[in-house]
Amino acid sequence: MSVEELPQPRRFWREPRVQIAFAYFAVLTVFGLFVTRPLGWHFGEAIPFGTTARDVFPEHMRPGDSTQLYYWMWLFKENLEAFRSPLFSPYEYGPLNPDHVHVMALWGFPLQVPFTLFAWVFGGTVAFNLLVLLSFPLTGLAQAWLCRLLGTSRAAAGLGGLMYAFALSRRVQMFGGHANGWLYLHLPIIFACLFLAVKKRSLGWAALTGVSIVSIAFGEWHCFYYTALFLPFYFLFLLAHCGAARLLRDKKFWAVVALLAAFSASSVGYAFWLNSSVISESRAQDNRSRKRVERSSPNFGYLVAAERYRTRDIWGGGDMEPSVYLGNASLVGSALVVLFAGLAFLGARRRRRGFPPPPAPASATTAPRGPPTTRVLYFFLFLFVLGLWLSMGMRPELPGLYEFLYDHLPFWNLSRTPPRLIYIAHAALAVFVPVLLDRFVAAWSTRRPRLARWVLPLFITAVFVDLVALAPRTLLSKQHDVQSEVYDLVRAMPPDQLGPILFFPIYSADYSQNAAFQGITTELERPFINGYAPTAPVAAYKFLDDIRPLNKGQLSAHMHCEMWRLGIRHIVHDNWVKFLRSAKPSRDALERLVQEGKLEVVKKDKVARLYRVVEPAGCTP
Image: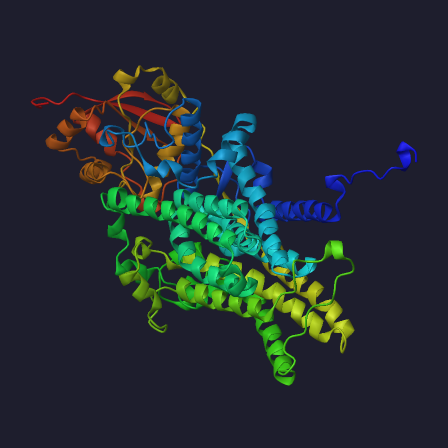
């Protein structure tokens, strides 16, 4: 036999499943470009800020959570390049945070790792937008992988990935700068890795599960608390699904359990430390009272038309915050009800036989892990109902499950926004619907083959129209251009002469408008007094609250001395940041203080104005 006749090893990229995965990745990437429009035209100059009904050209920076998240990612890169601790925060709050340590510096982890790699090549703005774009195919692939492990067909698994990756709740959170919009990716990865760890009694898959859990604990505390609540239910389901009697007699299974327990214990320990030494020492809990949670609990109108049609005024009452977290589910929900009703009717007629298995695959090489069982269907239906119930929060028309957890479960009272929980319902729905459709197709393939053949394509089309074709536009925030004579002068000043900058206008230490100053600092790289974090130091809250009369041109002798004692020598007023109209200060506030002799004008241009603080008389250090 000649060398040419010998069987050649099969290349990895020639595997059909690999080619299908790459094709699916490419399709979801194209869909992602469409739903993020017009981001593609401003990829290097703006980042997402929210959603809107029409294209809006990004003319200004819009301060908010997107700018804040960009700042934390940039800070991680800066710390890495300087060989500093990832928790080091040398800029925000200046002398009001003397330890220069801030736990928020890891917010969104591990997003900072790919951001840093991309930023070294393309720059920070492009790196951030690449994370937005790549989140669609990666999240879709993870969800499709989970569906395949649970036994669905490839078409149904692709539908599940499409539903989960393009859920409007995920998009509005990610575009709004909330890290959990990206961390939707973790839940199907945890479910899939845990499935393989239990089924194969694999320590490797158990370790991957544990690493994913720990990364959520560092990156998004709310997602960790919620995921930790639902994981025990999923673990019990896996025991029943994979054969509890056999697993409990296997020593490898107990080794897997021990490894998972070690990772979980470390995550819970970090959560306890965070609560006792960081959150409890700040004012974060003040904004998470029962009354605040009740205000943020959505009414039922948000479930069918949140954000896209702006129904807050139509449905009446409530807070606008739920629209930041919930998505539209009208077409998907309607089709789901019809399909489930059809299956329920079919099951009633064939109750003795139960649900028939899906058709056998054409070859063993393309076979899924096993046909989806009725147990899979009903477990994810239970998970969907429970996630949806809890995401409604403290609604008076619902039984008080959320209230019970708020009062008795550790950490549950650390979030003011129950709609964050909707990602659990979306993940469950993106498994339940594919399994249900496979059952539907199998049940009708012999009696109504034409109907069965068109069910999946029609449902995929409905989901595409609802979640992709009718997607709202992306509202963009332009990255701030600090190329001005004022900022050039600020950069040129020695740090001891400049001192920590006090940006104007003044807001509370946890107010989103302060994100504008975080964005400016990514270019200036100078310490500043203002900051935006839910875990801001108490000293920062107190000082910024006391100095806020500066917005009206009022500066008492006591606060003048306090500014000087903290080393504040300069105030910067930026003219190009788009602040909330209701929060705009008086235009002549600082000019009034110049006339009173408390400030001096150093330089002005069309971008910003720089003022020097005059040394007050009679101040004791």
